[in-house]
Length: 147
Image (cartoon, rainbow, N blue to C red; front, side, top):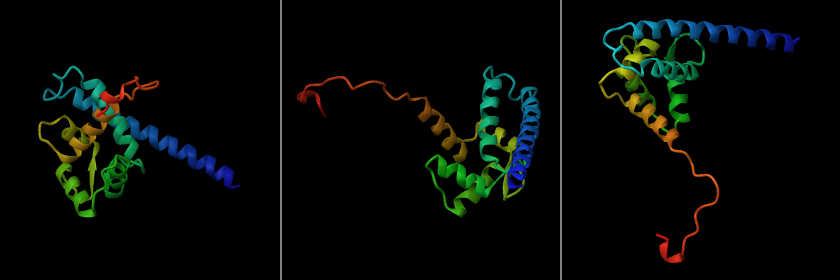
């Protein structure tokens, strides 16, 4: 019986995520058609990356990132924040609520010129991922070459 309930719960979650992605794609289309942003040639790939990052942390799929989702996101990135710092980050990004921020707010922050703290953290994470770790054994060095 619980296995059947788990299957139904999984289907409902998958449906919710699909609906969430559809909604975010609609918002992406609005940004693609916005003259303020459409001059950026990389905009489609940026929007896709931003959508995926947003979906990763909008855990309940309701379209907004709340303080607990933001807390988990920053902890996962290795940048834990206090409750007051999280509230400040949300106020900095949000166009309305002090409890959540929407995908549109998130995109305006990521695509805008203003340097928001959350934007800096997310961009740093992406830069950090770009550095590939060396493969294979390290090059042999003489003792005199070691720092």
